[in-house]
Length: 271
Ligand code: HPA
Image (cartoon, rainbow, N blue to C red; front, side, top):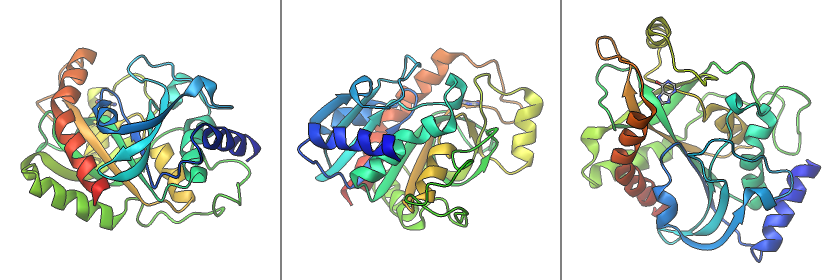
């Protein structure tokens, strides 16, 4: 708690106590939304006390404070993954800081492999539930009672109102055909899945698979924050469509979907 408070106090001091109402975490290859933000303050993670540092080149490592769609937002440009060697506590540190900064809702994006046979490359999937297959989670250990309860409920991890708004916004933007809904399975990575693992994940009810998001969502729900999370389908792992995954292809699919994701997120924030 002390570390969280020090990080929060630093950000407040650097930003004239800027009070964001929405927090946004940008996933792999999905940085374009940051360009839409009218940035008032930009802080390097390296300068924020106790903040972990990003080791993945595709993640920038900056915290932005500004306005998007007329709303005050804060953007985490770069997230932390368990596969980088961070503890789960470190992975969710920034999300907890955003909550202490005052956000009332959290938006998250990620790149994910598509397991549902109806999905196409560069589709967006609004996450409506998840399966946590990470080896541990950020709530293990002594509970931070100031943040939330020991046994948080997980009946509705993804906010129904935000999901409905996102679906309505997708329709209004002419994106209904490429905007799906489904269950996200989170694995530690960093290797992608074997064919048998992809089949297993489909069998247990997942529509997409990735290496992030669920730890942050667990921490957010622990603190009572409503969450909207969107996966960009960057590779297809459904039967008959699986092929070796090339990182460049993942970035290409993310780049293709990025304008749609950006427009959608901006529309929901504005609302
Ligand atoms: N598996 C796990 N993580 C991913 C994938 C995948 O197929 N695609 C993008 N992130």
